[in-house]
Length: 314
Image: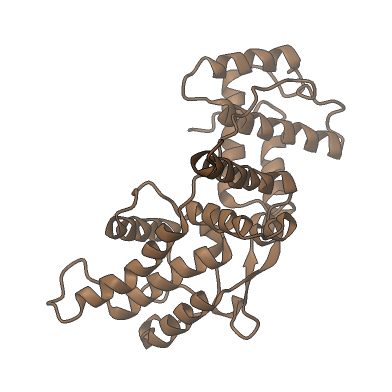
């Protein structure tokens, strides 16, 4: 979207200064900063001719009504946009350019709570085994255009095992350095949202898969990154997503399953087997316990379903 002069709702420097604050002081990711910027640009285009200092609660009620009339804006999307605007005003109050937040009393639509989707333990097993099965099938056959080198199948197996063993996010995985994988401590150093660091546990199967992959990497692909492409660069998130789809197809699973679903599966299976909620929260890198608690609802729903199916007097 072009940044026309009026699109920043003068004073001109307020939005760029806020975005620098998000990036440099808050440590927000490029994606989050872009989303905040987009939300603020959309506001300024809607209120063209006004200034941030002119806008009041009725203005934002009108803007909320305008967005809610568009079918593509669900409650979650609306809340995300207004979160950016609220944060912007809070920052202005903190640095003294404004005295009050016109959105402080604005009520937003309640976000629909959907239980996270996850794979069963059997489905996870089939999925995690698919790279090595494809490697075995490729041996002895003439190399086809879509075939990988053996070390790449081992790499993909390690990726899937690490996802399920640690519950990390896709951007956390592709940013891992080889030095972040602490095999002696059976742990992985992860830099998460807001550049916050945490240690996650690396299970036995994931450790073995990673060691086999690292031993098989050709010299030309070796680098400081933990997960590498043939030229030694880190895999992109998009490359990992495409890899996922390939093995989902091989496993007969829904191609819409994302790496994040393995994160959901990781949390759900831990709670199913008795892990405490605080430990799962720390492993996932959730700032608030309430974010983790949704997985307890999944577990409770599964128990209820099992009870209703199995108890003779349910």
